[in-house]
Image (tube, rainbow, N blue to C red; front, side):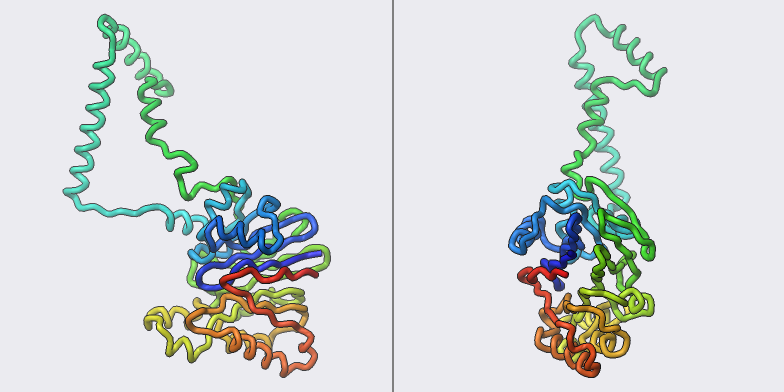
Length: 333
């Protein structure tokens, strides 16, 4: 048996659990660690039973709780190398300084080193100068050795793993198009068109059941249409209603991004896929990543249902709506 449990879906956070009888993986961690664990418990999923975390891309609504959750549970994180680099850059403070500020920074560093050196010499006992000089000379002849004070200073300057927000217990890289496995779940990542470093969707297969996650894509390219064939449970984006987006509160620049080919699927685009290219194999279609400002659940559902009504053989497909504020009931096949 396989199970999909959508914990959250929307612009404020995305996450879902995909599990087989022996393996559990979390797809994205777009809520805080505490909220993710709370929703897993509400949905009947044991956080301690997770085997891994998979990341589709580095946007905040997909990685907000990643570092804390991975460290707390001690599980490996699977993502592409460009996505990992982008996530690390996002969490690494970047500052700029003028030339005068840089000179001041250098001067303060020199003063700090001088102060540390004077403190060391002040602590030295009388009569030990010659032996200390000999020790300094011997240490300089062997670069691998260092004074205890220097070692302590270096250790103090190195941030601990807990203090580093980019620290992960283990990282595993994959490439879109290359299948890999976690436990008894075979995973096939596929490239999606979105404005991120290396975004991807996933197909999960185990025990004769196939599930897919395809959100955050500006349009449906041929490779995505191919990947979504013979899927039993499909989490598919239906982000916005075109008219609501155009009349909505977003700045024009954001509207252009959402409408672009690296933005998000509209209700209309999702309906066109369901009507023209969808093979009808899924028992459940979960509409996800609905915008709270530019969509309404009833509009997304109506659009998808009308698309399926044009194909009477597809009417057996059940349409579900993923929510932002609460987990969806687990879907088991």
